[in-house]
Length: 345
Image: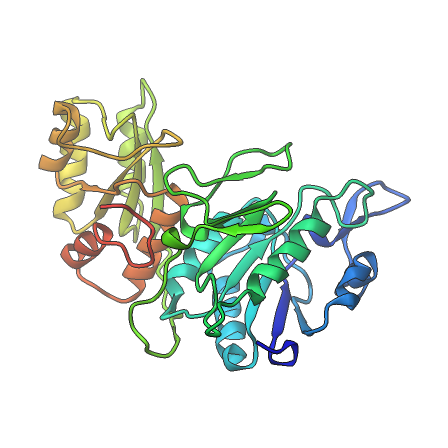
């Protein structure tokens, strides 16, 4: 494939990778994409076109929300035919949420969308941002001899590993190895060479064009169980006005207290049409509600299995499905089926 046929759209949303230290206050502040390019002169050596799009003002990742996700989808959709791949520079704190959401919103995706960032600002001597950026661009342009993209899905690249976006969780606020895909193998490892795990890469089975989605419903909550959780707390969450779905973070393989009040609250919420999805608090592993009596009681109360989903993926998938106005029964059914390789059934 000729270099002149290759191009990347670099989308800067904000985050640590695009920040510089204020000499007066010592605080980290956003700076322009032009400065980013000056700090990474290697970008000028690439022999293919790199165009840039910058959020103005940049968004701290803790401020990312569904409106920003829709904006990203719009940018990718509007420019889809013009570029070989897309690289999104994003803050690390909510990167896994954005990657999960985009995997559902970009139906029929046939090109790489790689999210990356850094733990240290790009202007710092020991920054991890430069390597993450350059390798992400290389992955976004990688193609088979036939011209087909090597990684036609939404991914996160961080510290030498390419991971499926909707399988990824931030696990460290200090180390460069900030993300992990506990329940799914990495899609590529970057050393001297980038070694792709082609068997695990998701390729859309249909040859249909990209179908962007913009409908999301944020009436979703996360309820994390802990020993001694109070009935009034559970009641307050399940009775929140307008709430349509809850991600229930349970113990182990999907276990929860067998207290009558707890199961009754869940059952009553389900009867009102609320969708309750069971995911494990454990970093790795899957929900098996039929394994123990405690999990089986949840099934009887109408709770559905989230299988080996991350919390980030379960939350954004619920927003996506609820946004399409499916009935509660249909949402429950679709939560148990993979849309973009987010769960193993």
